[in-house]
Length: 126
Image 1: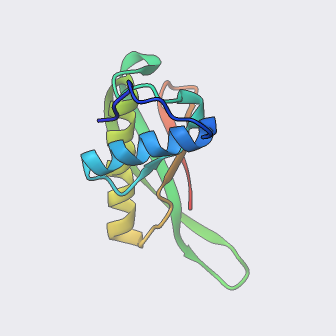
Image 2: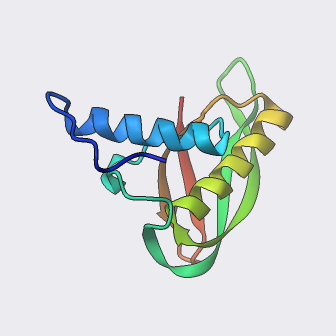
Image 3: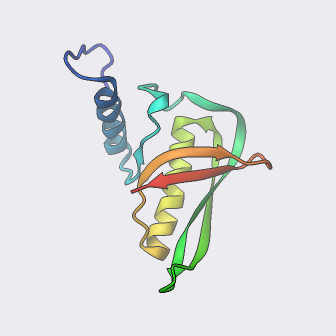
């Protein structure tokens, strides 16, 4: 884990954030990259959402024809609560499912959008 007693100089906030999340990613052995910089360098127990048992949905393209018409496929996982750690674990699960079945490469976790039914839509980037 990141030693928060270390003081960095001449390093911007985003660079500190990326160093922090990459260190956690490596510790967890994840392929996904936490890229929600608004969470700062908070730990895995930091709650983004206050509830429990969030169904996380992830959509990716299954096929696309020559006219750019896409067929989509979805994957799901459950986050026990709204903490960074649980959301990241659910996103990693969705990513692993998508990668295994579709060769998806969108490994950057960019957002979780709250849906009307209380579930979360995972937003990723490459």
